[in-house]
Length: 232
Image 1 (cartoon, rainbow, N blue to C red):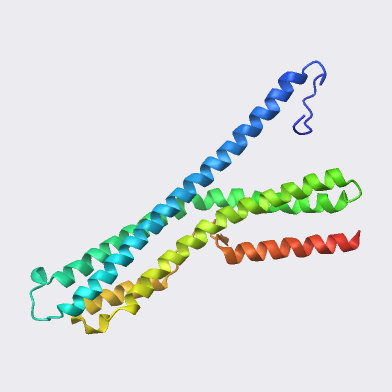
Image 2: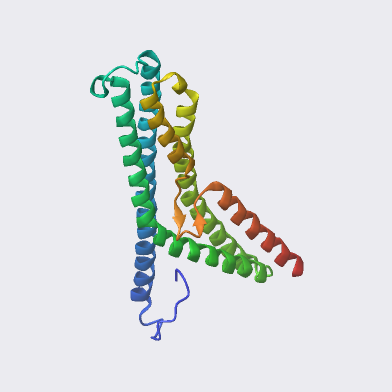
């Protein structure tokens, strides 16, 4: 049997149907989790691409601003100003996409990551309790490692998204924006203020998916594990 389940029927008589049901449900559960996380990774990569494109356009626009910093040009003929306006639109579009992604995945990660951490705690305790039976202890430990790996794979895209969104601020401050016209500097100031607000993916606004929080969870789990081992 794949796992111990009580079906309240004769296990010997219905062995093959029960075996098929166990493997089938396991495949369905694993496939749904992998598909959901894969879509999340794809969405994050798309969002990172949007921020990369926006950063590149900002860098190019600031370079053009320095070359054509003429305050007497009409707004419609000021190409540098129009390019910065387009950069603002691109930035807003990227932020809207990440906000939509946060809205869609926030409750999902609250449920999934919450169950993940609870299961990690239970399996860690089970591994310590069953240290006398090495075979069972290894099963619990391997399951704990798998859950920790899933949490890492969910935290890494969140960290990547945060890193790419911070590049907007770096590209703006790294250029010679101070040589631009007053109207362009006003737009740049607005983008700088918006860049101060961190863009992140959370689990129900309670847990932020990034490597710092993953490290904290891993350290805490390992600390509890060592304490339980010392009490055995």
